[in-house]
Image (cartoon, rainbow, N blue to C red; front, top):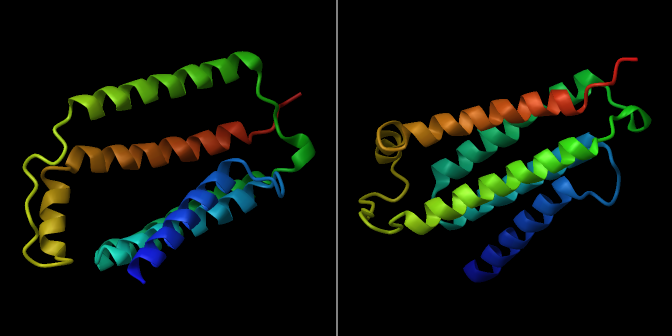
Length: 167
């Protein structure tokens, strides 16, 4: 049963993640945001299967709750209409592809030169939040702060990409 649930949640995560970007139903950004909520909830299901109940609760409360409310607020505040959305210029599209390629190269380099699995500690208590908090704010403080910057950049990007052209 656990294997079936894993494949179900993994397939839902991948499917909803693809539908966030390439939504064939509508070009409405709110629909993409709702698919992002479904992606986050299905990832929380994967955390439950890993017996990481705290991470599943945080995933739903923080990301599906607070962050998605922020994204929806920004999207609705801008009041986009499909015919008024800005077209992407070819130079900016090329710059975006170059930036995405650069990020992919950096990630590939880091993964190839990292020592994955070295120094892993077996957890003493399953789902212990004390060890999670200590590791999060000591060893992983920089990645934790970088994730918050990525969320800030995503919010600013949402505002800039959906801003109407002034004529």
